[in-house]
Length: 450
Image 1: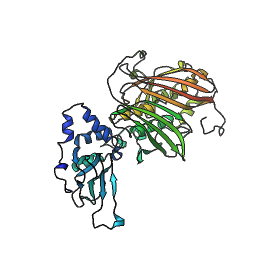
Image 2: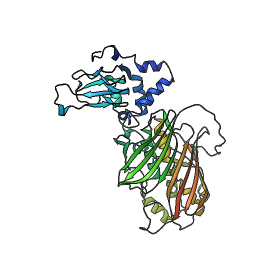
Image 3: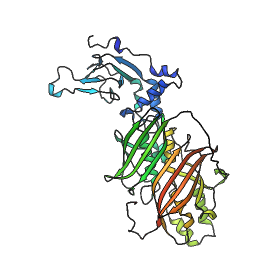
Image 4: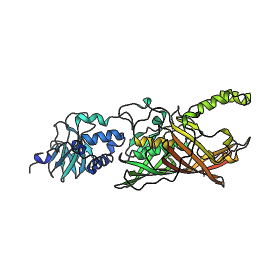
């Protein structure tokens, strides 16, 4: 047939409307999963992807049909679902300036142009199926952050700002250590875990959430330098996806993360772990209140109180309330409630990233508890860190963190962790091994961790 759109380009009924009548039908999942793999949409919040899935239309073309003609109005973003299309300049364009190339699955056109009309011709090379997001929904492609479509990071928790990444190119992101965040000697391990998990999460569709991660800390990070996160797509399956993330500074890999994602499904369930009987968080003091009490407690020497008062105190972006008193500080265990400070966007991937960030706070130090004595100076560095997410988790609700250290040997401390929600459900299990040593004199501590 002639290269006309004709009936082959006829739009089917709005796909979103059709899927809405199917509830949790596999078709809706398939559209959402597909959109999650389109590079252009990589940094959109999950809520935006879902809204786009409801708004897209599907169009079919035969080989040789025009998909777009030079000079015709741009009617929206067109994403190749199946088949191939060719982009070519009009016939009167000089040969050396003809931008002929082929579009394949996940490629797109009709977005990012300053013109309201097509500047080139796009034709189907084979039978072709496209998703089209009409122009009136173009605002869904413009979001404030990777976690929220409508609100800026300043309106949300400091943690959400810490976990906001800048996309540099496909599967490459940049993260920062914010000046208002608590500062450690090197980049905080929880920041590396949380930001790397955020980068990996932005390369899978929003229906798949992390269920396990395994991290290796290689070199101490520099707080004053950006961190580049390179995501490698190891596997994409129907139910599971696997990603490997490398964090780099100065061209060196300082941290690696292997993450497995799973689409939610029904299955066997049991829980043998029981949440211990501890006071609820409302009956416990937070860190700021504990500090204030120590500054005014006459049982502490005046010199100690004066030094503590002069030391700059930066509240952590995680609120913590300890279940044990100071008399238990020599036990190889620590229980405390925690939650993110401030408002978090309602993105399940973000909440898991926040929990990953918080999981490294005070974690490895528990393995030093039995060895603490007056005058002893120590330091600890995380070596590896693993997490398993068993159930959905809300990081701005209280979670009980149980940390135990069953062993320390050879300069390495081993800790395990469990996190329960207020309903007593086990939501996360963790393990970590850390380097624990007596502190060396300044300047002698090597930067490599091994």
